[in-house]
Image 1: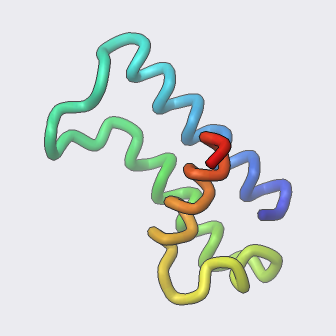
Image 2: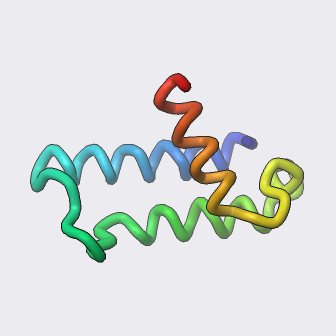
Image 3: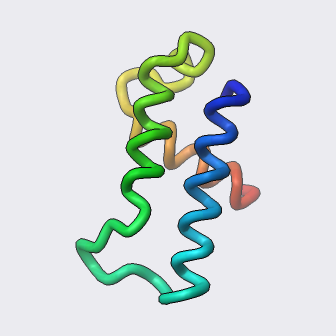
Length: 72
């Protein structure tokens, strides 16, 4: 992931951590940090450096990045 993609992904993790620290896990159907996910996915689809990693599924790229962040 390019530096911009890394920054957007870090912003997502920061928002998620802040929300969970304040309120716990989101309720089913609630999307409190969906804007951060959308920004990251849009970047993956439009960035020439990141696009090869995305293939056709930005959700898979987001999931892979989350797993890498968790150290798996």
